[in-house]
Image (cartoon, rainbow, N blue to C red):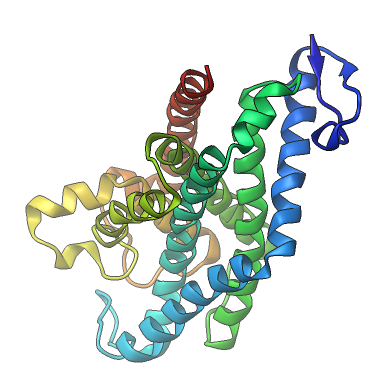
Length: 285
């Protein structure tokens, strides 16, 4: 079996390799191609940063004094601690729109046909794309954490648990990037991919514990919010950051949020990576 080297995208001779090494190597080549593209078009990164920063400032300063967390008084400081895990999680999941648009653009511009002509693992195109998106998401989280510190957010459980929380966020973001890949393969234009990648995220993120306590929702909606994979990651991050404001909800997913978050992310990754690769193979023939 053959695979493409780092220079094969530019036309060099492929080398002979086998198995998992093939996919890992080819995926890294494609990932580097996408990362180089991001550096050459810095607007992608800049505008990707602006939205979550605006959410932090608007939610924290405009709504912070109006929303009361159970067991506390309404205050900017308390709401900022409550809010940030939700903003972090929203940021990594909203990256799905960029993933779907990027895959759709590659499909419509014929880049995938060029990859198909090369001796490379077909799944590497999607794996490389999602890895590049993961790197961009990690950079966005780093900048967002700095902004959060400026508005009063703090880590109270030590650096190791904080790193664990960011790891859960990146795992969730990677899982959702596979949803974006499937959407990008299923629509006919990058514009449609962007819309399709975002429209379902709004109910997912707002029917959750990200911005308001779930106890304020109607009873029939609370169960949906508690079992939302987004809510599990938000609660897990609050626990690991030491940002839990008020009592932890009694719902089982909230009491075991770290484990539930990991399971949800792994299940989403497994299901949608399989569906995406299957769709990609049928699309390129």
